[in-house]
Image (cartoon, rainbow, N blue to C red; front, top):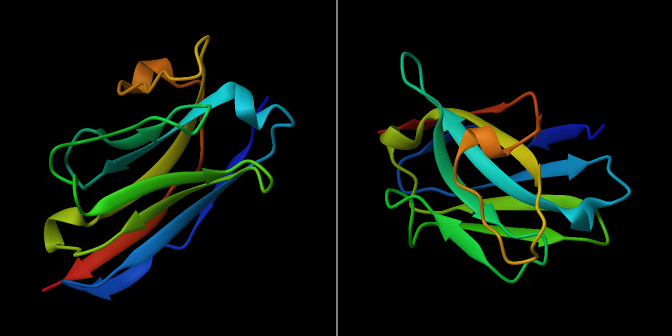
Length: 127
């Protein structure tokens, strides 16, 4: 069982930045690829970004490429989502998730690949 706790959400004006953190309870944190997803009111949960369990590979949704960065700190069992140039369209509840993967370079993009989910943190971007 892996527990994930997100933090760092809040309200920001368009063009601003936020960094979300996700602390994992797993002693085998390095066995999991970590992903970020978001869900806006009335919309489906969508993929934002992911990092392989090795930390050497990342992948992003087209809508956030060049603005968002996923990173991980294995010493702290924590994954981060740095969000820059935020826009009102980025307003959503953001979730981190963990996927146990067989290969160190795998970057899963589908929610079904992830076994464990955090409770979510709200990000609100005003214009």
